[in-house]
Image (cartoon, rainbow, N blue to C red; front, side, top):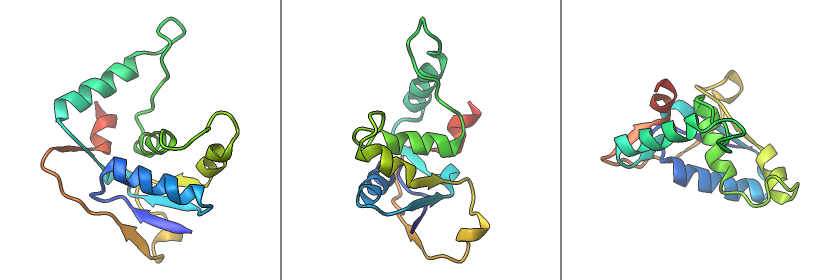
Length: 131
């Protein structure tokens, strides 16, 4: 099992790494999902997230997007996997990925992979859920 610490990690890079490793057959646990950074202009990120949150229902034809940090991260990973809905190898890989807010007891003593990369413009995942 691979344990990844999400503190100060960039969402896209973390999602790409987790998707590749799960396709290889590894079980992935991502902790501290609320501390993951989304790089870019803060206002445009919030506007895009708010727009996708408001498009709900059969008339709008949009998916309901959760505000929980672990579900935001899991959705980003799902976008990088092939054939998630069709029951292919992407759906098998997606089942091997677990996301957590904070660090659960079972992962406190395990060795974690850190992916630090500082950027000037970013917003944390936990701030998206509050808006």
